[in-house]
Amino acid sequence: MTTSSIGFIGLGNMGGRMSKCIVRGGGQVVGFDTNPDVISAAGAKSASSVAEVMGQCDVVLLSLPDSRVVESVVLGQDGVLDNSRNGHVVVDLSTAAPESTRRIHKLLAEKGAAYLDAGISGGAAAADVGKLTLMVGGEQSVLNQVQADLEHFASNIFYVGSSGAGHTAKLLNNFLNAVSLAATAEVMVAGKKAGLDLAVLLDVLNKSSGVNFATLNRFPKIITGDYLKGGLTNTLMMKDVVLYTELVGQLSMPSLNASGPLASFGLAKALGYADEISNTVVDAIGDISGGVRLHEKKDGAS
Image (cartoon, rainbow, N blue to C red; front, side, top):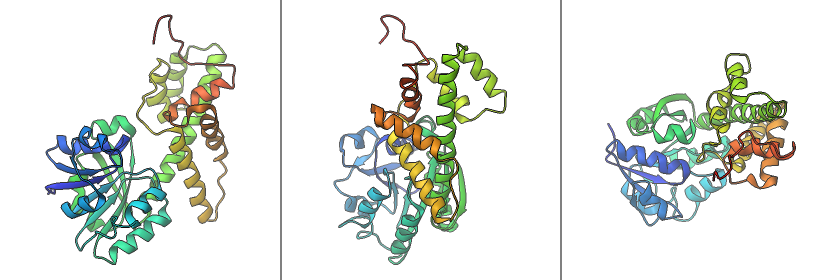
């Protein structure tokens, strides 16, 4: 059964979209964000503080940039932990370090509150229509309790294990996403320089062994000039790849394929695309390949 009022802390790019889905589905959202303007835009009732959200809602969702911010919101003065109570359920939809997640889970459990780590996948497009995929770590009984709330914005919800497992699965997924995006961007620039018809090239790739999420869903739009703005930025993509390398280091294994996306998204950041959607990595690669663009604007086009 869906709870009557859901708290939401962090109503930016993805959080705002998820909040809108909850409201569209008949739920009520009490939201807090450091930028008050995004709260009403997300269809939420505005709260003045984290404490106010915690006081009004039994289920509270977090959508924050990284573990540093998650820890400041949860563990900081008058934050989530200070205001948690027996029966509270906090669901962290951020991309965060599993080690940090497990620490927060333990601290909240000591106060009788539950903490689920729910990595999300699907990007802005899936968030807009409530079709995200969630990979959830924590207690399965708690997931069962709040599943109806999460189904407002997620069509695929997987329980993947104990605390930290959701964020671990998210890092593994995001690393593959980063590899395929960076590699496909390089291939598409090469195809452009070689004089190939890029639409035909994509048709070939999507019927061949090179097919991946980027060839299927990103580049058919990019070659028309639509970069699908609103998704993960180059800075956040780089952050996710770094988190992945830290994870495999903790697992005592090498990362033999991290150098490609680290170089690609690092290049994008260095060339001024830091806060642009990660799809613009193709323009960064194009910049150092002679100013190549997959889509040439027509005269007079904006």
